[in-house]
Structure formats: structure tokens, C-alpha cells
Image (cartoon, rainbow, N blue to C red; front, side, top):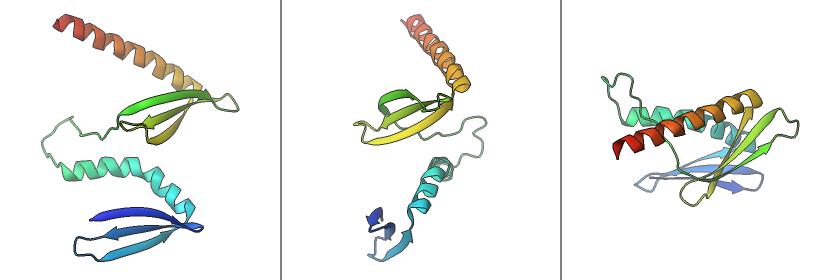
Length: 127
């Protein structure tokens, strides 16, 4: 099975081709593509859980993640948020932008430093 999303004029066409060669197509507006993109991370998590059902997993839940090749931090034009631009995948061929309110960005910075300190401590205690 193959799946593609191709720009065509002023819209997109979602194509799903089955192994037997049959193809289903759905025309999508740019707004519909953006809506699907917004839903994708949640759907990816649900699909991962569906593909790996573990009824007795307790507190362990599979999480889909992507490697980050690089990042940029920029203040938003109004200065109320910090924009984190992530270049994803091994080569950075895909990008994603996250907007953090300043208070959340500060909390994230503290949490990252704390977690990195824990990792460094665990590594040094193993050696």
C-alpha cells in the first residue's frame, strides 16, 4: 500500500493505492490539509497504541518520537511567546514549529537543565 498527498493547482489530492493496484483519491483544500497536520501527532500516538496493544502495560505507553537534527529559537513578533523551530529526521528534512508562552519556555528550560544533570549523574555513577 502506498499513500501520497500531492499538490494539484489550488488544492491537494490524497491518494491511497492498495497492493492490488486499486486507488482511492480524496481532494483536500489547503485548510483541510492543515487540519489533518494538526491532528497527526495525536493520531500517530493512537495508531502506535493500536499496532502494539498491551493490555497489562500499566503505566508504560509507547510514544512515537522523531530525532531532531537541529533547532532554532526565536521570539515571536509580539514577544509573548518563544518559537522553537525543529528540523526533524536524521537529515533535518522535515520541520515543525512550536510556540511556547514565555512562562512555559522558562519552565521548560529549567526542566531540561535538571534532566540533563540527572543523566550526567547517572552516567558518572555507572562508570
